[in-house]
Image 1 (cartoon, rainbow, N blue to C red):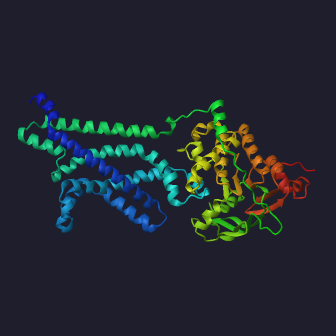
Image 2 (image 1 turned 90 degrees about the vertical axis):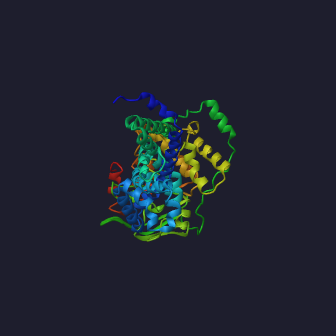
Image 3 (image 1 turned 135 degrees about the vertical axis):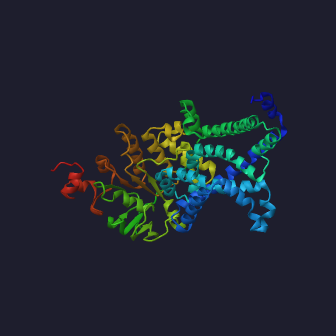
Length: 504
């Protein structure tokens, strides 16, 4: 039997087919969008630490991924027989098909979203918490934008799948492409010609919307964004536009004033392993304390408890004479989040937000906490100028070197005007030639009277900048002494040997 080409081409002028195309587009777009939203909620519930959320979400995903869509479409369309009150909506083939598609796609998209969510680095969430950003704000500003970029290629592929799945709704007589085709070849028996035209219509829809979604993907691709370094004239113009701001007043210890930070009997364990075994520490305002010790001694765990990145099993932390953290506290409470805003944190691995420009990284927390936009932006540019990166203000983190990223991380922490700064091995991830730039910024902060706790392996730096050096080993503070005492051999041979100081 010869293929009727004239009839095949004539089908592209049939109005019923074009109306069916609109139906397919409406059905697929709504199912994809609603399914994507519900899928995200399901993914978030499945990742929740609460079993009341994770278990029902897991059961939903398992169940609806197991049921064939064709079976579900027919079931939903006949649901008014069991529940007559649904007749007004579900008796309409479009709404029945949409409901079945959404229910099914939500289960599939939940796993797509879950893959995106777990791909966001843990350090991103920790950076948000260190800036005092709440759970909802962290999802909205940090996690979701990154997870969506990761999931988007798979979500685009899922849209293509949804377009093709709309053909199954023909079993309940929805006037979509396959239904129109079936009606035509039932009259003239030109099955191949009609189904070929139906296939072409589907290809056109998939091609058009696939191209549009790929353009969206390209727009969101960070590697395609390459803002340039400002030239000397641009830097000078930007610097001239900055309004001079008064320097931040650092709290100072007067007579009878409470220490900036007090740690009382701090215990912390991971499973059966005791990391901190009763830490007592007082830090006065304006002091620079370097924390040293072998790997696994509890240094990082100690400073992470100070800004609630880690909970404590026993003890209490007091901030400027006010109760701050107790064992068993909810680390997302308003009291702790307020205290965290007074403590800046610089991480070993920078933890800049890759989807935001350098200046946006710095202004994110001030904007979130309700500070006015113009002063916050001015402050951000001034801090970038302070760390020598004003020319790179509109770049993205991936365009900067490690040393530059760490200096941006310091500026980001300073944007909240903290009273205490924590540094977790700020130079360990840097090349040797980049270390000096970061250390110089920290030295400048010390000269300004910033209270700082620095976990470091830079022994010469620790000796030169610190008011006190704390040597930790086996979860305990073994030595708490001034650099002068350590150099004078009065702090014990163990700490001198660790710091590479030759015996006298």
